[in-house]
Length: 165
Image (cartoon, rainbow, N blue to C red; front, side, top):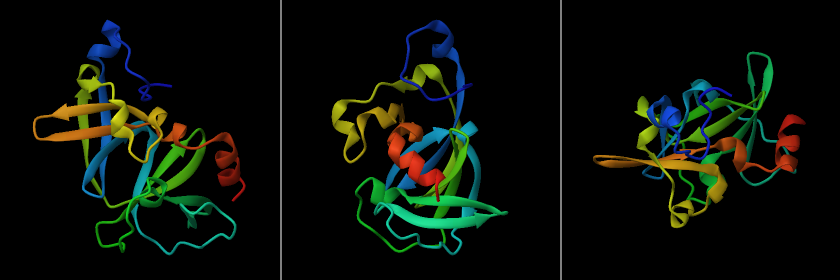
C-alpha cells in the first residue's frame, strides 16, 4: 500500500517521505487520515437507519447506486453528541476495498508533511480510541494533529457486518 499510515519506522526513506493528509475536526480536536484513502467528501444526505447495528452506525446512504455504511465518529469515540450543522461532512473512504462513510464535524484541509514530523503517540493520547488506531501525532507550531489508521478501528466481525449492509 503506497503512503498508508503505519507505525513510524526510523529508516531514512520513510523519514523524508512526503505524506498528504486530510485533516478534520471532532469536538474541537483535529485528526488526520491518509488522503489516498479518502474517495470523496460530501454534505450530510438523508441517512437510512439499519436495525440491529452497533450504536455508532448511523445507517446507510445510496452513493451513485452503491450502498455505503455511515459511521458516526463522535459515537465511535464516545464523544458528546451534537446536532449536525452546515459544516458537518461525511468522508467517504476506501476501507480495504469497501466504501465507508465517516461523519465528522468539519473537514479542514489537505496538508503535506514530511514523515519525520510524525511522532509516536503517547499511550494517554488514545482517550476513547484504541491505541492501535493512532498512527502517530504531528506537532505543528500551534496545533496537534492525531493521525488515524481507520482500518484498525474495527474488528474483523465489524467489517464483515458493514460489508453485509
